[in-house]
Length: 250
Length: 232
Image 1 (cartoon, rainbow over the protein chains, first blue to last red):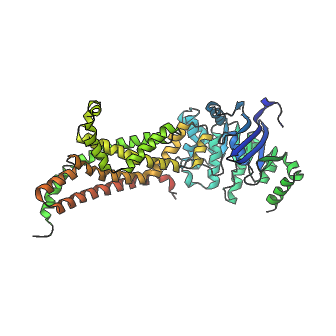
Image 2: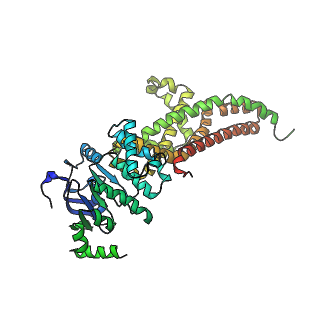
């Protein structure tokens, strides 16, 4: 799995993560090349969210090695900041800043982190709001938007930092069914433009359509990882088969 | 002779209002100093370093755990007994009853308000701080631009209660010779032997001030939570 390190934009080697005595990640190794789209699935509590949260160090791993875009993640604040500048993240619960208007949500990080001018940050914000098809909501507050709109804003907010990599942590799980497709459409567009993406999701249609690799996790381990056709049509592991039968039939 | 001497009330209210300026000085000065102190205490308390947070907790425990009257007496009657206090640069402040009252009220309010602020900071959704971190914002930027504005809205109701409580505590300054509204009221009572009329009058004035503070904070809260209301 771990081949020539420098072509991989994300490299995880033998990563362990503990919450107290509970081991959330067991010896995880994964490499992602630039432009690759990885979908991570698995039952709840399998460690998939923890895995992507380790990549931008919202969680600190306890063993092994994580290298993102040439920066190894240690407790060095400089490297963490460097990684976070290049890695965008979209959360299950949107996490828009409730006290700021939509456009100000998008402008905050470019202004503070990239030191963009006000007009520059505003133009970038509007460009990405156009791209997620809600420029008319720019001056509203997050609470005035629907869940689907809020999640599209969250995607636009991450894109404003011009990231090399996008992490999605169950981006559609908190949405009403009729709003899921508008968010998946934006993500599909992003994938087609060549963005490197790791997506934790149960949307198997999206995985089939977009993913280069589907990773199945259970109990903190990567049980199986294969291209979607192989993964869905010919699952090897019993746990994968069981998971797929549960998620695809209901 | 009626039960209440209205003429005396009408006569004494203007006299007590002379002291309202001092009441407001005590309130606003110690509110400003106490709030500044509260922010410093909060930062020490949440610094994550035990040698900063432990002394802060002791300070807060002492000032919240003892009557403010006792604190005023210790500062006014107790500290001047100590020679090094009389020799210190703080003596010009501590030798005046006004200075002592401001110091006592500020130290006391600072302890209460820092706990209110801490509640606000702890109430901010962890996901929002994570979103800031994921965007690459430094811890300082996250605190200033995300945590603080949300925390301020969360703790405004408790803070307004504390402002009212501080306003009422200013009356204790009259115990160390200050002629605030309460001090004047006590003087009038000593002259007229009519505690009933005079103290009820001063009570009415305090009630009006409380009402004004409540309404002001209600207005501020409404303005600051515009983003929560969904407009049609």
